[in-house]
Image (cartoon, rainbow, N blue to C red):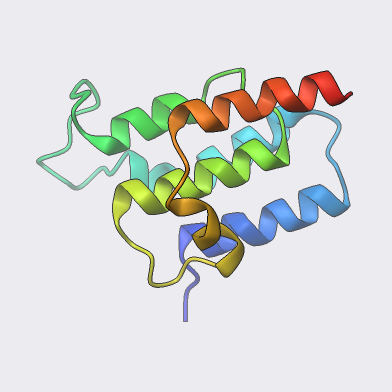
Length: 118
């Protein structure tokens, strides 16, 4: 059975934490690849990339921002995805624990905390 985007991305982040890439841009681009079909669906006539009311447009825009730089923030992105999509069926427990409290702001601020700790 094919894994969900959240499952695949969560496993990817586990590896990225264990074997850090040279730049956060690797993680960002890989997550964009993993989530592209979910956040920018080609065969959905109701989808419009300029419709900012659509949660998928907000999530795609958030993912490409330069302030997402840490594994912690990218896990927050996964929790936001689960929260916004409403699909909690196949999300890993470590992501589900974050869903109720996560906000766009909390994910962004997690990067400031990480930068200060460095």
